[in-house]
Image (tube, rainbow, N blue to C red; front, side, top):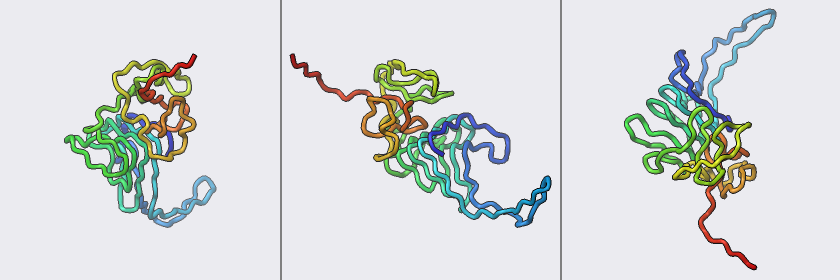
Length: 210
């Protein structure tokens, strides 16, 4: 999955506590089934690999993203997982350059290059549901009213979101982000797209030659 927003997932099934889950090994009987004149053969799946890149998984039920058994691999890169009642990520194979919420007891233990600990970097500073755009001090730097139809407006926030310019070095899409874009993509669903929130300009001075 790439550049996706998964919000307020609150299903009532066996796995309804999870916004996204990779089930890994699936046990099938190996039998064939005839259905409306077509014959289907059951296929055994012993391993599945799920990769989430620049995704935002927010405000679900108990858990954000989970790998459910030994046959499931789960990789997150440049993602935001926040707003679940118990924890953000369960049994991930790898997590890098992602903002992952703390556990419900306030602890945080997600190792990986560039990962952002809310206890250290603070609040995400975003618009919240339904679009989850990152806020910035940059004048006319954040979209506050949508994705495709949204326009950049002055957010006038006191601080930039820590998720701006926090993506993995070399991530695709930096050239798509609007100027001023810094030197790394944003993390979350809009990173590496024309709808990414703008970087605050670097401090400096203007030299005017007449």
